[in-house]
Length: 114
Image (cartoon, rainbow, N blue to C red; front, side, top):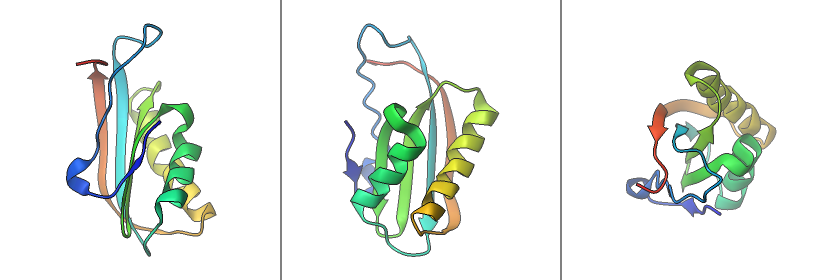
């Protein structure tokens, strides 16, 4: 289980410990943006879980700054589209508007446990 972080220097913390059932490498999307108003940790977690489900790795909440890191089974372009577009849609359904992106990243081949 991940927790909502409140300090940007702590984020993203990718706990790459893995059980035997995990694949040898992960693809990870990291998206962060500034919202139209502050978001609370509970709402941020709910939005992040809606977007990533069991693949959620970490959440950032710092006032109006909100970010999500999650594993992806998709290749780079569909993964970034999902991480970005679905992220914005889920925020809108929760009543928030993304003012601008701060980070949109794709990390390929993250090795669990290293």
